[in-house]
Length: 371
Ligand code: FES
Image (tube, rainbow, N blue to C red):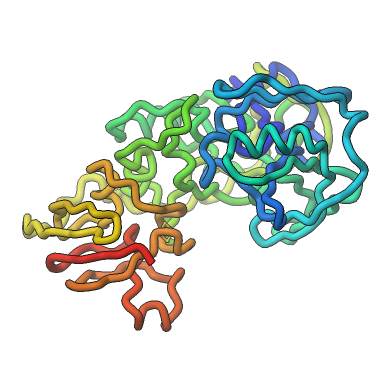
């Protein structure tokens, strides 16, 4: 039987974790989790995917005070009573709603850190985000679901396969459990921990944020763990999955040391294991010139261009690394590629030479440009 070994919250989205030995679960997940967010002045969320400095912020909040620390700045703290009363629009992925503005001094501190004007918002009584993906439909500033659970055995299996050693906190779970079988959490449908019954909703798709080195604002150059997850945890939609998104069916307390009582099971998603496949390689090498970056590389013709560029220290723009977000789009000036998934591109973009470097492989020598 699995046991809870760690409970984590992230009061500020994308910032450092807080460890608990006992925590209350409410209708939004763990109390205090992702109840603050950084927004630009147009209401777009700013996260560690695009602003990795946020991952180094230590954010402590209670009912009376908040305190922010970062290695590059003096700490700032403020009484909640000093917060303003105004609300601002905020968009978290497809959901647009209101966040409560905190204080201009905190905005100035964050703007200095991120190098652009931004502000701190909290989730409050007028926020009212409502999602349709699950029954309780309550969600604060988390991406898609209120809670993420991962087993230590799953991490052990990933670490056996990856060239790097990964820490559980790279995956930002809320609840960590032990147990003997890797990916046992994929088989649970409903389970109980302490006073709370949980329901598994869907596997968690993982993005470039997991490639950030823990405790730093630098990305790993080799694209791990996404690279390894692609070999044994990639779905038909090309996303890679690690951990399970869960929702709570009631409110109550959970504690480290609580047993996981599984109430019902499900058939887990089957992911092809391509780690042992010998890629159909012709060992052909070609030259790629990233023209307006003034960088060139030799790359093979069987691995995605982006993976090889990152491994060589050329940090091309990217996000999902699964053909979904379009962030890695470049323009093919000359040469030929094999395009894989390209759902992020419009027919017009494809006609105009757009290439998703996270999915495309080279066929010939290439010249690519950022737009
Ligand atoms: S990184 Fe998202 S489409 Fe390539």
